[in-house]
Image (cartoon, rainbow, N blue to C red):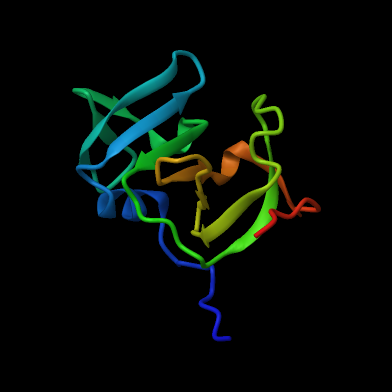
Length: 132
């Protein structure tokens, strides 16, 4: 089996520019969830969602919808610096960028979750496996 490497070499800003126009849900430290379309990604530091500028590296996470699921990746657990319960204890890691992790979201709606590395405390191999 030929495995593609998980390392993308991209920054969070570069990855978000590829996702411009997609529906996203920003998990912010002070105001909770901010849903909207990514209308613009600036070269440095900012993205525009719902006529507001956000600094992606300061967010808890960015969930982007309408991205087809992939078989690539490895099952891991992610421990975050913010309270997340067991939400990320068995999730597929599909990309590692220069300053972010990309995970395939769970649930019936295909999504990806982008975590700035500043919000990740640790990554560990998941001990629970999904049955096929």
